[in-house]
Amino acid sequence: MIAGKNILLGITGGIAAYKIASLTRLLVKSGASVKVIMTKDACNFIAPLTLSVLSGNPVYSQFTNQSDGTWNNHVELGLWADLFVVAPCTANTLAKLAHGQSDNLLTTTYLSCKTQVMIAPAMDLDMWKHLAVKNNIEKLKLFGNKILMPDSGPLASGLEGEGRLQEPEKIYSEIEYFFSSKLDLKNKKVLITAGPTREYIDAVRYISNASSGKMGFAIATCFVNRGAEVTVIAGPMDEAIKNNSCTIIDVVSAHEMMNSFKLNFKDSDIVVCSAAVADYTVKNPIKNKIKKVDNNLQIALEPTQDILLYAGKNKTKNQRIIGFALETDNEIENAQKKLKSKNADMIVLNSLNDKGAGFEGNTNKVTFIHKGNKIKKLELMEKSLLGQEIVNEIVKLINPKL
Ligand code: CTP
Image (tube, rainbow, N blue to C red; front, side, top):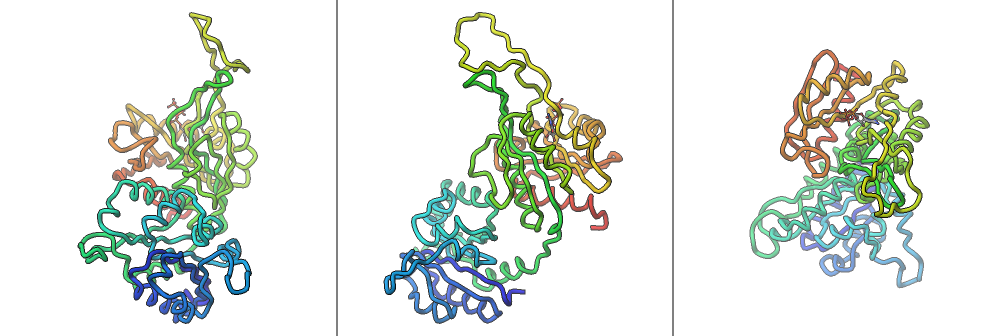
C-alpha cells in the first residue's frame, strides 16, 4: 500500500534520532519516495546527510540552498506529498502549526500542504500536560490533522511519563493504515451548514447565538478524510475552526445561508444541517447605529426560512438529509417531531441538560433519532470523535448493510 506513495517527513527537535532514521528506512524499504524537511534545531541532533543517504533525496531545511542560491519551493513540496508526517513534533512547532506561523520551511510547507498531515508530538511530561499544549492539540485535530499520541516511558530529561515519540513501527503502521483505509465516500458530494447566523439590528448590533461551528467542521473533516467532496456554508466563526480542505462559503445572515444552500443543494448526495440558524430576523434593520433616545425601543422580527425544511421538502430519492435538534425539555419527543415535520432521514439530538454537551466546548453528547422511533444514545465524547460516529451513522443510511 505504501509503495509508490510520496511521503514528506518533517523533523523538529530530534533527540530520538534512531527512531527517525529507522522510520525513514522502513518507509524507503516499503517502496515509498521519502523527502525530509528538518528545522534548524533538528539539524543539531541528526546530521541531514544521514537522512539524505537513507531517503535517497536531498534534505530540505532552508528556503534557499546556500551552495547554489536555488529556492526550495514549499508549495511544490506540499503538493508533491501524498502524506506529510511531522515526527517528532516539538511543543514549539506544535504551537506554530496550531497558530498558522510560517517562520521556517517546515511550518510554511504545512500551510501549503493539501494532503493529510500526521503529527507525532514528543516532549517532556510536564510540557505535554500543559493546557497550552492541550489546546494546540485540540486545534490541530479540528483542522483535520491526525495526532499520533506520545507513548509513556523514560524521557530525555531523565523523568518518566507521557511524552515519548511513538515507536517507528507504530508510526509506520499508522501510515500503512492511512493508505489502506478505503476512501469509501470518494464520489459523494456533501453539503453542510455550520455555525451561527447573525441578524443585524443596526450597523453594529445583531441577534445571534453561541454556536461555534466546531461540530459542523468536525463532521466536514471526517467526510473529507473518507474522500467526499465537501462544501460547508459557514456562519461567522473563528477562522481556526475551519478546514480548508472543504469548499467554504462564508455567510452572515440566515437569508444568505439559505441563498447559498439553494444554489448547492441539488448537486449534493448528503446534506447535514448543523447550523444554529436564527428562527427570526429583524424586519427593518437600521443602516446606522441606533441612538439611545427612545425609552421604549421595540424591534420587530419576522421569521426566517427554514433551511432543513426546504431540504426535506425538495429532496430526491437518492439524497439523505440530516438535521440537528437542540432541546431543553421533552428532548426525544421534540426531536422525533422535527424528524417528521422536516422530512429528515435522521436527527442528531443535543440536550442542553447533558453536562459537557452543546454549542461551545470541545465535547458533545448526542442521541441519533431515526425513523420508526429508533433511537441510539452515545456517550459524551470529543467533537472530532463524535464527527466520525455521525459520519458512520450517515453512511449506514446510504448502505444499511454496513
Ligand atoms: N434549521 C434550519 N433553518 C432554520 C432553523 C433551523 O436549517 N431557519 C435547522 C437546524 O440547522 C437544525 C434543525 O433545523 O438542523 C433544528 O433546529 P432547531 O434550532 O433545534 O429547531 P427549530 O427548527 O428552529 O425549532 P425550535 O427552535 O422551535 O426548537
